[in-house]
Image (cartoon, rainbow, N blue to C red):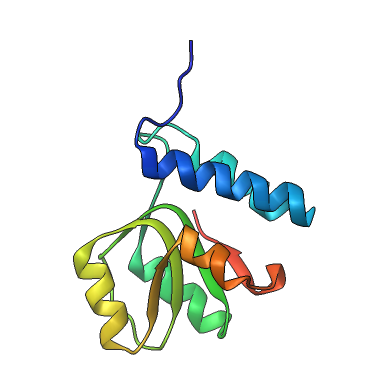
Length: 121
């Protein structure tokens, strides 16, 4: 029997993403809820250098990590990242470049255009 994530915060994020997906009719929100609902050992763990490399190609996008953002790598420009979890060092590196780190709930509250989102795994 599968029970899903046990952290209350993660469960709330999953439900919020599902509701927003049904309400807006956009597939990206339901896809994110499915990715966050994975077991934590399978959930995405993305290093900062990967996000920085994508940011060089796609400026002005919001990068969404449906898992944990880790601090390996350097940031050379201002980037916006929304993630389920973020290491303290990764947050510090992004904020040193005047970038923005937000939770997935904060991302939903800001009501971004789906075309401005890039899912990173």
